Length: 109
Image 1 (spheres, one colour):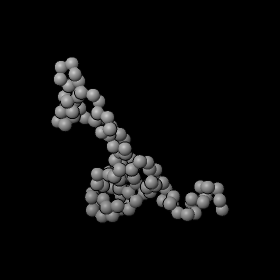
Image 2: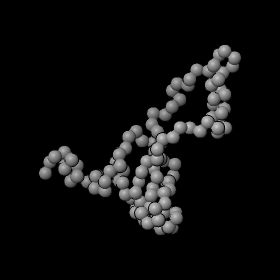
Image 3: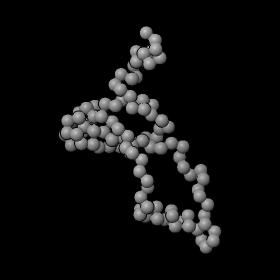
Image 4: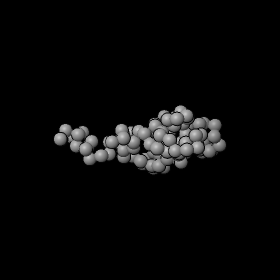
């Protein structure tokens, strides 16, 4: 899926629609001190000499996107929603989705 690098979105800091640049947030490791993570690690430790196996098949086939939108006026970053599941994506320029740019990319006139 191609997502334009620049989009016109609502900026909660400026309180108006402005031009935003899009970037994907970096993947960070999970926090080890959250209650759910502590519970999960305790469950994985098992009982005595019989630790529970690593859970297989629990993971989702795709990851959720985490886009940060940077306002072109005030320069502050914000997110919009919780993201959506997508296998792969690329940040494309404004005219990447047009027919002329596709033909140009293939080398046709």
